Image 1: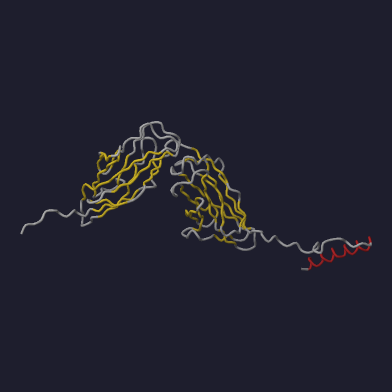
Image 2: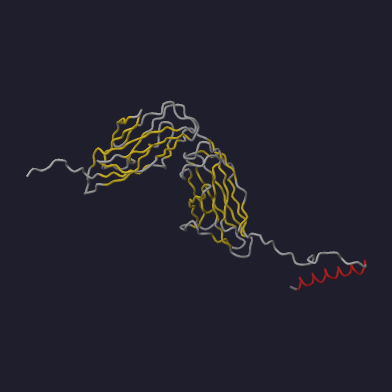
Length: 336
């Protein structure tokens, strides 16, 4: 306070001396000697998101992005910080949100979790204190710096024409300046195959289950035959249900041979170009059901096998099929 008053008196004295020497008034704004206020939009936190050195192009089902997120609190008070990493494909919008995996861990920060959330324009991975909901913020101590390792991987479900992703840092508390978004290229490996079923359903002795299956290549073109294998369950445990598979071909249902609820679908002769799809219409019927301890219902996933001879299939999207093994009543009538 004393230093402030002394400085102000010195400025006023200098102005008075100027007037006395020149006989003219000093034409200075009335606020020239007022204290300069801090900008009203100053933010206490500075946040950055940077890729690690040597970041390679991303590949579907392969190389991911490894980044470092840092925040520094330049204020004299503890500050909340609620960050998220946004990832937006440059090209077609993915069908659903099964095209990305996300994780986060602390480098020099409290124990951390990465939580996947989504918005209308793309994916957002919230970085939050461990074992907390996605809405929970961190508290950054005064004049402290926190840092995190964040990473994400792209899956085959990312459309074929997405050749890059735009990666940004968001903080919905709006109390930080954030580094500019990054654009990371996406390469197209051979065999970026993704499956998609149109619906889930139930099969019983009285009712079959039908669904459309699309096999799409979101990687580089495949020019040799693909042999998709469809299965019910993952083979880790026997199913009480024995199912029969038919595929619609040339307007009629054709039975596909198989055993243990595993079937070889008609091959994709000549392979699939980048972005191309093979469509199957399939029908499941219940051939037999082994009732165990009175249980007549079971559910499991219908999916393509992970390997189609031309690379793994992204099996995130599956069809859940419920089997109702209720016996069909006998049509015979007892004679009295």
